[in-house]
Image (cartoon, rainbow, N blue to C red; front, side, top):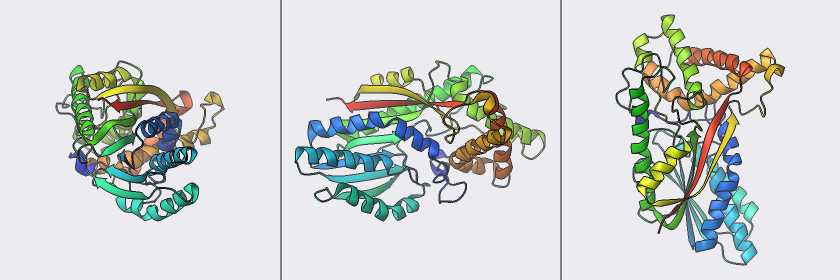
Length: 368
């Protein structure tokens, strides 16, 4: 499976689209606002560039795509108003893999720009938007051309499925039953990818430029711990059930692995220190319920109907993210049944225990 060609969030605005199933990602962006707000404020008030270039990596499509970039523009504009200084021009670079639904983004731009004009009033700097298709595990922009990078819920995706996973039978990710060689293969792929990501971004950032990165992670030192592997273990259960029923081939399940790595804070820090181009300004760990529509886990107070709804919500969220990968490997015919089973399995587990994603946000400054 060529991840670069296959991986993208479900496009459009339909029932299974990412645009309509990305509330969880919006919650995470909102939760991390103090960190990226601080980063853009520090950046602008220490350099006052005449042109501010903002790049969002793994922008996807839908209501979250321009959320942070728009806030960056408003924050800088408000600083300029307070100081009585002229606002810079803004260039917003929206990056994702070539399969991303850039058309939906471009169709939304006129209304976004009009909203910004009304909010900022006269004297605001011009805003220019561009789409940049390509993998962020390589160079995307000219050298020393970007002031600030932002990426949320993208960097846990690897550039490829790690090699040497033949022994990971019955699993589709790092699980408690995965042999040590599987965990090692995933970790080495993360090291390779993340170090290359840092190198490329350091070449593209101006001196003193910044990055704010949020990705799925874990607190535990164990990469197969439940806090990062459970969501995929439940998907493996659904797929294995369908294999036992003869709906899909067992060999197909055994050869399918999700190209994701959820690092610990120490693993991220280690790669940043080894690469050497950045200083860590701030690191935060947050958590969010699997079901973005539920604020708090209510234990025994959750009715069976509510439990089913929560399972459906989570299944829709994961479907919007992982469906293209599943279709490329298993075909389209089984997709509805996979996620129907998956939703029921998730609902059962959520009724019995607290289920959360762990998020790691790191704010970096380019050294020198």
